[in-house]
Amino acid sequence: MNIGNILPCHARFRSDHTALICGDQRFTYRELNRSVDQIANAIHASGIRKGDKIAMLLPNCRELWELYWAIAKLGAVSVPLSLLLRGNGLRNQLNNADTALLVTTESVVAHLDPIFDALRLRHNDIWLIDTEDHHCYDSFYRHKHRTSNEDPPEADIRPDDLYNIIYSSGTTGDPKGIMHTHRIRAAYMTLFSSYYRMTPECVVLHSGSIVFNGSFLTTMPVMFLGGTFILHENFDAEKVVRTIKEEGVTHTMLVPSQIAAVLEQADFNGENIASLEMILSVGAPLHQKHKEEINRRIPGTFYELYGLTEGFVTVLDKTDFHKKPGSVGCPPPFFDMRIVDDEGRDLPPGEVGEIVGRGPILMAGYYKDPMRTRDAVRDGWLYSGDLGYVDEDGYLFLVDRKKDMVISGGVNVYPKDVEEVVIEHPEVREVAVFGVPDEFWGEALVAAVVLKPASGARSDALKSWVNERVDARFHKLRAVHIMVDFPRNVAGKTLKREIKRHYLESEH
Image 1 (cartoon, rainbow, N blue to C red):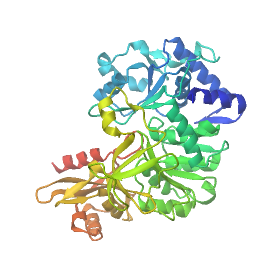
Image 2: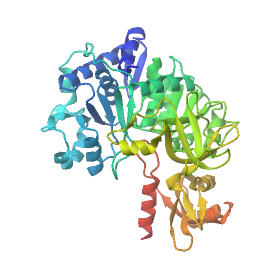
Image 3: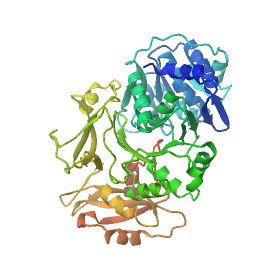
Image 4: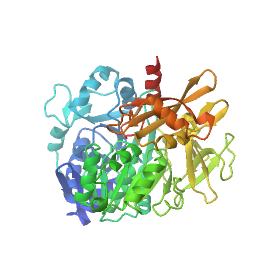
């Protein structure tokens, strides 16, 4: 269960098979392994050893992909960070991770300079991938070109050695570094490749950021099998459709906002996407309207995964869509799930409670944070903070985040119920519903929306349309807030907290 051994295995036995396509660059497994060995040797020559933390503050690029595998070979620990981090959020994560080496770009340096004195890094602990000459920081490629592409030194890596730290967020408050071991990532490889029906001939496209944990749901399986991985530098709906057709993509993963954008492409149909065997929705609940549209255009390919970076998932298999269309699936083999009340007591089917689960990808804990680890994992069960219920067959139906629940007039209101109504409006592309303070009801509902291009819909008309269709007084909207686009994190997930802040500021 040494992740560092995967690439050398394919370089030996699948040497001429295409491993990576990134932009106009293509690499066989032999070529990719040689480049990765060179990077690993450069990192080792700089003094990095097993267990040291290497942070990557990079966009999607060949170098980021190669670093994951080079770091694994050394038994060091990869710490991918969001390019959206600034100021204290960036400082906190770099310091919390005990970063020994940071690999980034020249464009990020402007954000490092103001916080440099507060970092526990020296200037030569920061390597830039896109410059050979910088007055302060070292060049990634200068280090790489000085070393050989021979096998790096043996690191005696064990299954429970740390592979990576993934930060759940960190622009506010104390960062939470989620630890995954080689054993956990090996489980990602074997289990998810099976759940998705992947083979060594699969072609996997990833167009979202590969620094967030959801990306490992497809990147790990394709590398385990020795398939072909296509990495887009950024998400572009038109390019996604074109790549599927030109490269014969078999598997892809998208977050809901990306799925909505792809569905607006007229070419996302017929022969253009005939090679697809899986389109996986992750990161947030996908609106029922979009699920049905995917299944209409490409029947028998839609999967949905509900999960937490901390280590629990349910999967709606493509064969279950018609049977359980509103569900996010069931725990796959080796996973267990319960629905519990506030006292931790199991609830029967149909009753809403907190989702708790366990399985082989459960995190090793939060880095240097045993107290929050104990809060999240109790007696081996991960407490998700999400609300849901199971039906008589054991399939999970998401209700909402516990923290997003709105109490209006003493009634528990779940924003997701109202969002499903709003998204049915023909001119609405995306929606986020949240609660705001109300003197009479305690909280009232506001819907923020992103309209489809060329839409002329107005807030008052949208509000009236929704309020005529919701089934209860406490589901009625106080206001509709139209935005050009939603703020998102690096994974493309909508930041509802930021949307709410934007609305409240606009009201004042």
